[in-house]
Amino acid sequence: MASAVQVITNAADFAALNAHDLVVVDFNAVWCGPCKTIAPHFEKFPEKYPNVAFASVDIDKNKEIAGQFKITAVPTFLFLNKGREIARVRGANLPELESTLRRVALMTSAGSSSPPAESSTPPPPQPQPTAAEGEEAAATDTFQSLVPKGLEAINSAIEFKNLEALNATSARSSDITASVRDLFSAAIPSAAAGTPNIESDADSQLLFYVPFMNATKVHSVLIQAAVAKDDNNEPAKQRPTKLKLWTNLPAILSFDDTTSVPAVHEADISEPDEQGWSAVRLRYVRFQRVSSLVVFLEGEDEDEPTGVNKVVFVGEKGDKLEMGTLAKPGE
Image (cartoon, rainbow, N blue to C red):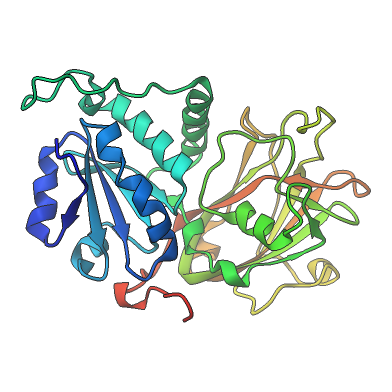
């Protein structure tokens, strides 16, 4: 295997990657700050994983390749088995990137510890997943089982700078904006932690305004809440039991409006699975061109705070962004 990250400059270079059992491709851009942050770590992977090929694709110089794989955010890391996508990680999340790499390496012949054919020196032993990483893989499988075939989590299409929240607080951080963004981020946690990302403040109700960067199609909403004790082994906050959704509003509703403005969808939230996930399936025909969602969550006891760890929207990203219109810093 190559001992360095291969820089892809054309379609022929990229097609040649199909010969490898496992390739990890870093889709990036020169104007992307997170891309520059994670690049030095990515460049060390070839030494740690000698049976895996690594490549880098600048989306502005290789728009056709980026379009082929529907890359709408950078950095995005694509995992390919003989040219077939088997996983992807969006964002500069190094722990998620490396744990995904270890997991998929074990699923392919790239996980073999036998030496490469061109070398008589055995490669270093492949890192084995820890117990925590095994739990993370199981949790990811649990999450993926809730995503119907042909659909995907579309949180990477959220316009995060314009997210809004009402009656929200966070025990994890004093930065409520960061906590709300973490609630809707594309990164999937390994398990439902005891301390929620967000909890209601004055009562059991939470309200969010979630704008999208394009016209999405929303099939279902996945909600993760704590299922056990919090970090101090105290009883966890109650989980949300009721969901209301409004589509394509220009701004967030008030709590008074949530009782007077008819919701596009209203549902009870089912009991969570072992990882804390509950799935609410929507009437898909009503959520075909969604530019924004107002999300109302409420717990059963109106006098107790409601905690939630993650909200994931499942569907299609709709009209794809043109590569030339990807937002650059300051725009």
